Image (cartoon, rainbow, N blue to C red; front, side):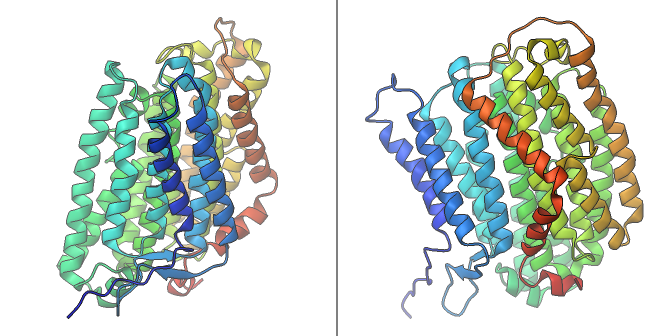
Length: 489
């Protein structure tokens, strides 16, 4: 019996191809372009992401699959869920490039491989949301993660950066092993790794339940959910700030993309088991992230615990998606709002950072409003959004998440979310207090590209705060094909 190649529709994976091609082009051109010519790699990366973004928007409403073996299921699936997530990933990359150009020059880290690794990681994120097979999911996860391990150590030989890279690599490899073991157990229980076939064969056997548990643990590592969050504060603090900003959104959203795709498309029959587990993970993540953030004196560590806490809010929507038709839409909308708010906050942290690793203490923001009134005002707005105070994108996101939780009967979890949001106001608004009610010294290094990133993220946060309905409707349209029927939406 001869080998038959799987059918291939390049249109479906064209955005991914564009991103990867831009990364390989940077790798190739580096041999021919002199080091004195600055920012060429940033331009190539930005153009590649912009082209992929246009192509992704053009594919809205398209449903199809590719890499389909003869008689089997397609390994890559394109639907509005994948398209919505791809828009988030591509926007994250564009904002990250705007934040990085001047920062890398100022810190002596301006190397073309930074943008190459950034693009390769984004291509892995995009495949995470498009994966219709557990094997492809694992490969996409590694494509996402390995460039991030290298980027975390970009500031070598700075000890903190090397330590961050090593911790991220070791714990990331450990979580990948757990995820792979879960895939093996699922395969043993169902005889397949294709998500539709797993759904058809999934039962309540001990092997299937164990596989579901291991998959959930692997995903929890990637999204930094408690108690699998240990790597986050040290990695966020030690990595270059531009890298921290990128991974705080991209890696987290990529993990949630895979979690939603697998739990709702392959394991809905086990929702009685995973819904409760996800709800408990969410509550623990909310409580630890918001409480421990109070004691942090380094703003990158504070935002690390903030990132852990926001994983908890998204987990509320994931748990609610088992019974609420709005759960997936709420999760997607929250991730979109978090993209702009968190990236904008990190952009201002970059502006305040004097040298690599210096100026990141909270006391460094004393008197920031006098040094840069405009940046201080925007930073205050981002802090209000992260707290969940209207009218901000963060408030809209939490409103939809809590509503989905109540619809799913998770009233207690919504209450935990509201209480921890109130707690978070202490450490977010403390930064606002330091900026406006103290005197301080220091420089603010904001280039035109950084100002552009701040403006884009601030405007987007405003729009999501004042006009959330349209964007939430798009997020609801992005619900995976068949999920509404499964949850009775």
